[in-house]
Image (tube, rainbow, N blue to C red; front, side):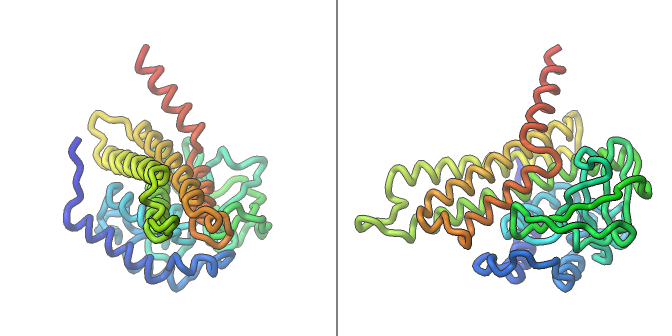
Length: 327
């Protein structure tokens, strides 16, 4: 498959990158720890058309598809954009007001709900909480639930709360909506992870060119070159797999969107975690400090890897698929 971005898609990438750079500067990432979702920025995201990405123009959406969604979410991941953007985009056709930014929507898979309890990202910021089952998507108004208990997050840029009382709920989508939500969520999660992987490579490369030792940039040393080369390969592979999965979701043909999305998520999660870890190594003593960007990239990669199925889930899913094909 030959895949290239057209001029409109490249401009979309650049537009979202400029938006994120202006509002979520990475040199001030430490100041964003533990802060709630900025509703002003949320409204600006809505005005940019991000929340209506996957909706047709005749229903108030952007009229774009999964490929453009992957391009947008790659940039959001690269800039560590805050808030439950992914679930709000997925809720565009299910929850009134989500696509226009009027509702902040979070969500979990039903497999993550135990006895009505669930850990939910950005819990304190939500208006609506979705629970995606195998055959139905249920919605809960957050103001009708017990107040979520705040917890210490793995990623300081992704606050977490524990919801209780997640029984019942209003059905807002059937089996097809539930299946589409999971596949799209997996692909867009992979795109964010691919963005984290590419940002980690950029940070490590810039430092390797800037930092001198023994009178030469450390990037000229063979050991560092090998690390950066491996990061580049992982990042490129994750990006290619994610773009390909998005294209399959948009126009399936004879391909299996679920299998393509699992492949993308598996590769992108591995790339993001490995590249962020390597960036910490390249930065050396500085890289291990809390306020350095590689630490935030690694923590975000750990969090994103868990959403919509972790690496083990997707590896098992792919293994089962291939085993079935071999019979």
